Image (cartoon, rainbow, N blue to C red; front, side, top):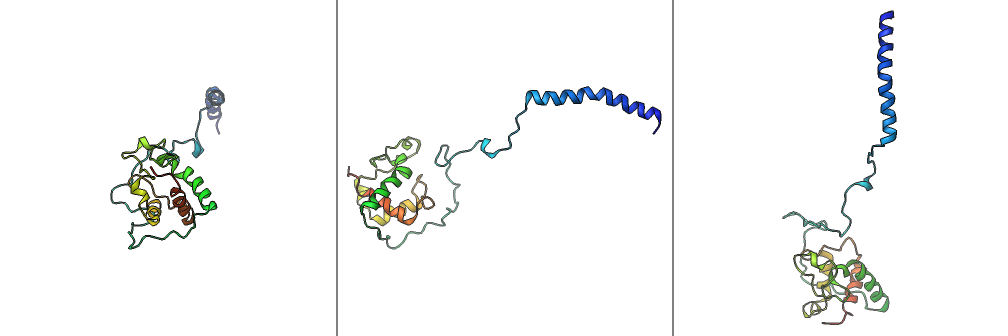
Length: 168
C-alpha cells in the first residue's frame, strides 16, 4: 500500500470519526423506540368492540348448521350444583348482553342491531331445553356461538339456570 493511499484513508477516517461517534451518542440520548413485542400492537380482545360479522357465505368453524329432527334432551338434572355452575357461567358469558335478570338489557345490548333476546319472556320459556341448548351451541343472529367456550355439561348447566329465572 502506497503512502498516499494510507494518508487518504487516514484523512477519511478522521473526517468520518466525529460523525460516527455523534450518531452513537445521539442514539443513546434519543432512544428511538422499536417495538419488538406483539403485546404492543393494536388488537381487539375477546368480545370487545368493534365486532365484525363474518363474510357472506362463509362456513362457521363448527361446520354447517344442521337442524336436527329432534331436539336434544337435557341429561343434566337441575340440582344445586348445576344451578350454581349455571349461574356462574351465565354471569361470565351471557349477562353482558342479556342482563342479570335475562331481560335482554345487558351493558352491551345497545351495541347490537337487534336487542338481545328476553330470556325470561313467554317465547323463550316455551322453548324446549334442547332448542335453547342448540342456540347456545350455534349462536343466533349477532349472538356468537359458544360451542368453543362451554363444554356440553356447562351448556346444560346454563339452560338449567335459565329455567330458574323469574318469568316476566
